[in-house]
Length: 140
Image (cartoon, rainbow, N blue to C red):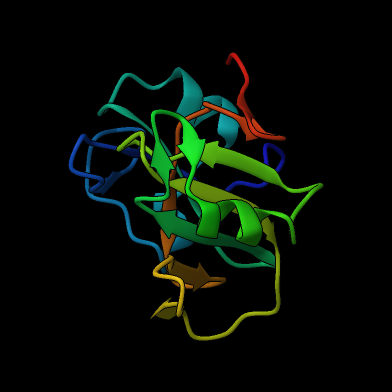
């Protein structure tokens, strides 16, 4: 991901911005930047990454309680043992990064109550740098 010029800045409300502070678009590559440019920008509250070109993300909402996944989330995570996973800005969700063919996003609540969103194009996802792997939070 760091090598892809698909980076934006974001505000605390998750609105995407260019490194210069104008609104960014998840569908307009002219508003994206390199990781280096986005990371060195002081615009907003953090980073975001625009999905597409094979990059995809699964967003699990409200699945962490005091940093521990719910039983439903733990079962779901078992299917992604070698993926990069980050805690979302809320602190109680997870973003599972990977690859997928472009397709429409999906949002569903599973039978066990887990809320799962899948996106692979036309969206951007916040990036926190707060890595979650193997049942533990890792330092940035």
